Image (cartoon, rainbow, N blue to C red; front, side, top):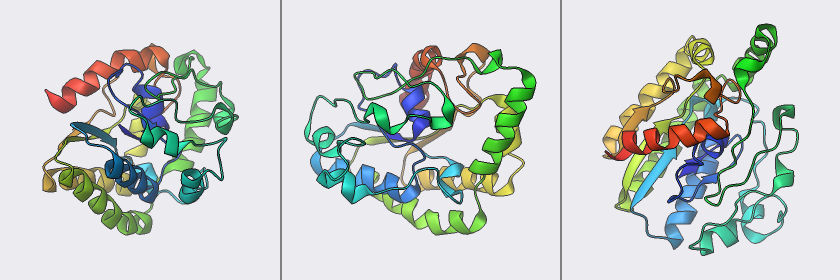
Length: 243
């Protein structure tokens, strides 16, 4: 499974999968994760998370993919160990996500996921509204970046098709009011249509699970599941992808 922090927080119940993720992943980073992994491994099933916010300006994290691979940044990523290991040991060093949204650190899982404990709806409504407004501003995609990113996603899907694996493209859950807010952005809606078209082009399944969570207690914040939510969502995800 490949994606960003939504995958890290929402796949802890998929114990048979290796979860490869980077906070605030871009389309180009995602392409490199997928391509690098496929160079060294045969796969039967792949779940890949696409998200319109991959095409936002000013990503939250700077990327140095080559640095991760050759060990110049060993405290952040240990990709060579992950890619050479059939056991899919831990992916992200704990110190790399300190102060992510000033929220608590996660709990490492053997499959590489990193769920966190906490409840979005325990926060006062005013606090939720303020935080959500900031995130909508930070995460809204732009037309130019989406246009530039389409060929990158196309190459990613081509590589996955060539692997002969069953492939599923997924939109991960959001709090419903956050999904409502994001869907007022026409580029966000356009991006979802492009993801669907790419999945169809390359024979992959596409499933939009952005509104799949109906238990409020399963949300950690406006855009991520919590530990309990990830456990509950994981079988829903696998079923939507492969049954």
